Each structure stands twice: as structure tokens, then as C-alpha cells.
View (cartoon, rainbow, N blue to C red):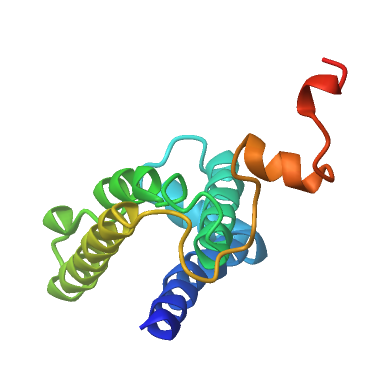
Length: 148
């Protein structure tokens, strides 16, 4: 079960990390697309959202602050702004946008489920967990003896 959870995390987080990298590699094309979809300041929005996707995806893969990295704050506005299937007149474009809209809703659902899993997640990158761990890492010295 643990291996499947880690595999799912890598696939889910990898999806976002890959798309974050794609925002940087194809910045000009993505900025034009976002601008055509009515995104304000698209040239600035693409690298900002690329960084958000990359950091969020890496965080989910590593299991570091995964609840904060759920990317719901990215998915909901992007889904509503970019994938407006109801505005499309061409049936093929409408279907394409509906598919992306539905996919993003499924990703929101998965992110909501991940937010309910207690931390630390299995096989997460280790991180400090309060003063007890800091105490051990400092070699067991009395923390009150350290300068403030």
C-alpha cells in the first residue's frame, strides 16, 4: 500500500512539476495562449504560475508541506478562466475545453483528498518536527543554553 501511495504521489506531483517546467520552456507560446483567453498580464502570469506548479509538484513528490502544496488555489481560477467550454461555439473546441475543465475538477478532487491525509506522508523527505527533533540534532544539548 505504501509503494502505491508513493507511486501515486510521484505521478500526481510529477504532472504539476512537468507542467511547471513547460511554462518556462514554452513561455512565449503559453503567454500568447493565456492572453487570448483573457488572462491579465499574461507574460508575467506564465512564469509565476510555472513556479507555482513546479514548487507544488515537487512538494507533493517529496511530501514536504503537501497540504500547502495542494495547488487548489491554482486549479480553480485557471479552470474557470482558461477552460470556459460554455463560451466555445465550435463543437470540437467545446469538447476539448470541457475535457480540460473536467480533468482539472478531477485534479481538485484528488488534491482535496490529499489534504486530508495526516502528515508526515509515507516516504517523505525528512524535516524538522519541533523542538524535540532540534534537541536531538543539536546533540542533546540543553536548548535554553543557546543564545536567543
